[in-house]
Amino acid sequence: MYIHIYILKFECIYFYSLYLIFNNIILVLKLYNKV
Image 1: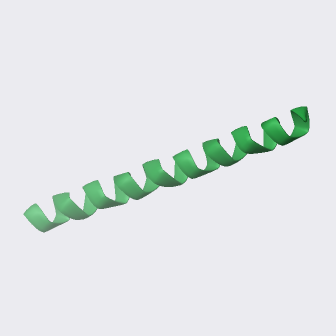
Image 2 (image 1 turned 30 degrees about the horizontal axis):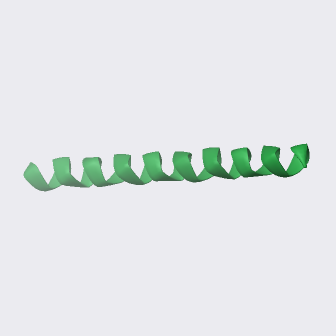
């Protein structure tokens, strides 16, 4: 049971990091479009 919770936490961190990277890419693209 504890191992399952640990895996869920790891997945949450993984998806959250992907989400942050995706947002950073969008911000960079917006900045390039303004230039």
